[in-house]
Each structure stands twice: as C-alpha cells, then as structure tokens.
Amino acid sequence: MTWWKKSVVYQIYPRSFYDSNGDGLGDIRGIIEKLDYLEKLGIDVIWLSPVYESPQDDNGYDISDYRNIWSKFGTNEDMFELIDKAHEKNIKIVMDLVANHTSDEHKWFVESKKSKDNPYRDYYFWRDEKNNWESYFSGPAWQFDETTGQYYLHLFTKKQPDLNWENPVVRNEIWDMMKFWMDKGVDGWRMDVISSISKYTDFPDYDLEEGEIGIGDYHTNGPKLHDYIKEMNKEVLSKYDCMTVGEAPGSSPENALLFCGKDRDELNMIFTFDHMDLDRNMDSEIGKWSLRDLDLVEFKETLEAWQTSLYNKGWNSLYLENHDQARVVSRWGNDKEYRKESAKMFALVYQMMQGTPYIYQGQEIGMVNTDFDIEDYKDVEIRNAYKDLVLERKLTTKEDFMKAVHRISRDNARTPMQWNDSSNGGFTSGEPWLKVNPSYKTINVEESLADEDSIFYFYKKLIDQRHDDDMITDAEFRLVDKDNKKVFAYERYLGDKSILIIANFYSEPVDFDLDTYKLEDYRLDLSNYKDMVADGNKISLRPYEAIMLKNY
Ligand code: TEU
Image 1: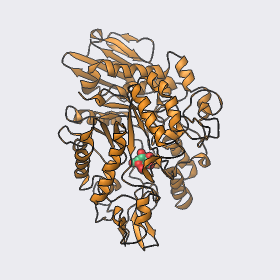
Image 2: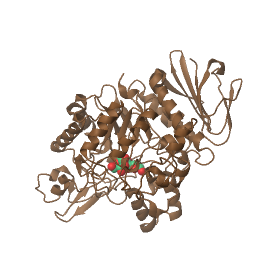
Image 3: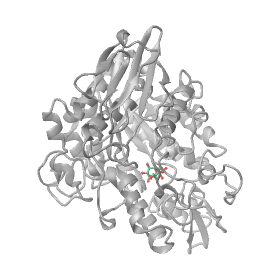
Image 4: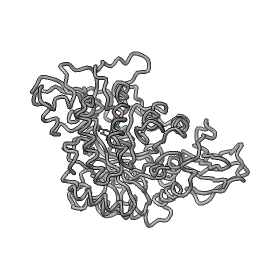
C-alpha cells in the first residue's frame, strides 16, 4: 500500500491563505504560522498552488522563473523552511507543476521571440498562419508578434505561451527543474493541464460540425502525451518516493487508465472534470457561462463510472472544490438555512468514496460564494469573458452573466481565508488583494474551532475514518437505488463488510427505503444530525441529512 492512498490532501492557494506581513497578499511565512491549524485538522499532504516568480497574470499559473519563489510570497529559504517544518509534523508538500506553458516574461520566451534562429525559438510554437483555435480565456489562441511576423500559440492568456514539448531540450529543462525541487524535499506534484502538453502539431482547424467532437478534443490527449509522461516518470518520478496527480481536462473513466493504470508507470491519479461540468451548457456558444441545474441522477452515474472503472486498476482523486471552482455549499447546497448541514452532507458523500480526497482551503469551515459586482472580481477568466460575451459580442446580458459568475466563477474560491471575525477576517492587517467575503463575521476558523459540532470537526472525523478504517480505502463501490432523484446512496463492500452512505441532497425531507438491506444489521457510525429517525427499514431523512452505516 502506498502512502498517498491513505492520505488526505489540503490545497492552499497561497495569495489567499494568510498574510504574515500586512501587504494584503498571503505568503509562505503565513502558511508556516498556520501549520498547527492544519495538523489539528489531521491532513497528510499540502498541495501548494504556484509560488514561483511570476507576473501574476493568472495568479501564478504564468511562471517566469521555476526555481525561485515570487518575492511577495517570500524567499527560497522560506520555502525550504516550510518543507522542513511540515515534515516535522508528518505533513508532505506537493507543488504545482505548470509546464504546459510559461509566462511570456520567462527568459525562454523573451529569447524565443527575438528572432527565428534564436536557440530558444523552438521552445514554443511559432507559425506564419493561425488556425481557428480559441483560448480558454476568450479570444484566439494565437497571438501575432511583430518582431518576427509570426504567431505563437497560447491556450490560456496571451501572457501564457504554450511550451513545445516536442523539443527534447524543453523536456530536459523540466526534468531538471523537477529534480531541483524534489532534492529539496518536495514530495510530489499536481500537474497543471497535463493532458494538453502534446499538441496536434499540424494544428487542424476546429471542425465542430462533425459528430461529437468538442473543442477540448483538439486541445487535449495529443499523440505523444503518454510518451512524455512515461519519460517524466522514468527520468524523474521513479527516482523519488512521491505522489502525482495530473489535472486532466478531456479525460474519461476509460482513458484515465492510460494515466494511472497500475502497469503504466505514469501518474498516481488524475483530476477529472466530468462531475464538475454537469451544471454547464458546454456546447452552447457562451460555453461554461451558460448554466443548468445539477441533475442528481447524472451526477451519481458520473461518479459511479469513475469509481467502478478504476477499481483495482487505477486510483481516483476525490474533490468538489479547488481554486477554479465555486464553493460547493452555495453552488449545489444551501448556504442560507442549511449551510452546515449541506456542507457536511457533501463532505461525507465525496470523502467516503474510493480515492485520495482533496480539501480546498475554507471548504472545511463551509465558506460560501461571493455576491460581488463585476468591478470587484480580479480573475482574468471572468474579466475577459465579461468583455467578450457581454460588452463586445453581446451574447448574453450582464444580469445573466452575473448569475453565472455568482454560482461558478473562480474568484468565489479565491476570496481570502476567514480566520476570525476581526477586520478582513483576520487574513491581513493591510488591504486584501481581493475583497474578503463579508460572511467572515459568522463563518470563520475561530468560530469553527470553538464549536464541537462544526464542519471543521466533521471533516476531522472523516479524515480519521480514512486513516483508521481500511474499508474506506479498499472496498468496492456500488450505487444504491440509482434512479432516486432526491437521495445519493451508495455502498462500500468487501467480503462480509458493508458501509452504507445515504444522503438527502435537498432541503425537503424525504423517506428512504433500504429495500434489500436490513437496517438491523447496521449501526449508525456518523451523521450530520444527532440521531437517526427510522421506522422498520424506512429512514426519514431531514434536510441534507447524511448518514454512514456500518455492519461491523
Ligand atoms: O486550469 C485548467 C483548466 O482547465 C481551466 O481552464 C478550467 O477549465 C477553468 O479554470 C474553469 O473555470 C488550470 C489551473 O487550475 C487554472 O487555475 C489555470 O488558470 C489554468 O490551468 C492555466 O494554467
């Protein structure tokens, strides 16, 4: 058994975690100061979103120097200290590997654009003509550069040119950089858009009329993707005891096994978007900003497909939030009357599946979405989309666009961590880089730690379950009463042992019949209410009630 199968990962978005020096931005010393808090929660691994030198066009996902920490976050010495202090507490550190692209201010790109025969020219993709590809952050994926009269490819902003992985020199630079950090004690990598590193280098125009093809099919799962990952594994990963998780847009339960299948020698697991994209109309012209309600049955079936397809063959990552997703209590739960109940319900449902669970900072205290005006948002994705869809092409109204922003935008997750009810939620003594969510008066760490019934302590119990009960890591998964539109119920079973997770997904009470399972064989192990109400085999579930029953 490998340690990452029994680990719970906590994701830190450094600029919003804790500001130790009053400049309005979180920093590495701030993380060091909060290690006791993370130890108390009981997590095993910290995944740090990028902390490297960067002009911050995309909050650090645009790196200008891979080997140095951004000065506003601290120094390399601070980072080494964080690694050591975390290790003293048995907490591992995973860094973000953002190597599909660099910043346009990276030395490689600065050189590359100078001339067609510059030694760095082939570090990126330069072409005389552009094709019809679009950037994920609005507008064309090609930017014209006057110096040499050619276009360069950027799947994200134009300040994020895509690296040319076809070039072995580029790959070696990346392997060396990874070794640099791993030799300092880094325990693994979360790999940004790893499924995009291999391009279809003939750059075929989108031909979206035909069949089921979507934009993502042109940007992901390119022909040499798995050759590159295998090479990375051989040259770097295999030499260390580390954990790896690849962010993989465009993945499916079937092709996931190419990344994380037992004998593939590639990655430990990937992040899928399948369950997170279900409330968006991706095929419409305004794409992810056109929303629909989450269909519970579809949600269950999507997760089931991943659970069953990877069982004994690969390994899942489990998540409902990260720095790109909204707060789940606001998005799919109820952040008003039933904030605590719904936060705990989601926690129980996703954490008790098979895989490695990820908690995004603030999720453990039930942080909620924002209600800002467009001017208050900082994220380049929202700002570009607003300009493009609302102001320029007028494909939607400001009102509709803002509805989507309030439900799904990335800045919902990026507001500063709420530590207490003092000004700015105790995040900074200065001016925060992004407004603090006014909810900090009631939703904050101090309040959570003082209430033994809090979401925080519920997460702590779930983490203990994963450490103490091998069933959570090993048992097989099956949906129970699959077509039920109100209740998410599943079983984890192995040999004679069985765990039932039963969760009311909505605000209305609902009865749930255990059918072929006998309630008398089970005991209540964990719940977000104090007791359980049952009559024979029928359980009366209150709003967002979630229970875990065990027959052992
Ligand atoms: O995200 C990749 C990605 O697929 C995003 O475009 C995602 O679909 C979008 O954010 C959802 O709204 C990764 C990082 O997680 C993200 O923060 C970066 O902006 C992006 O790569 C570029 O590095």
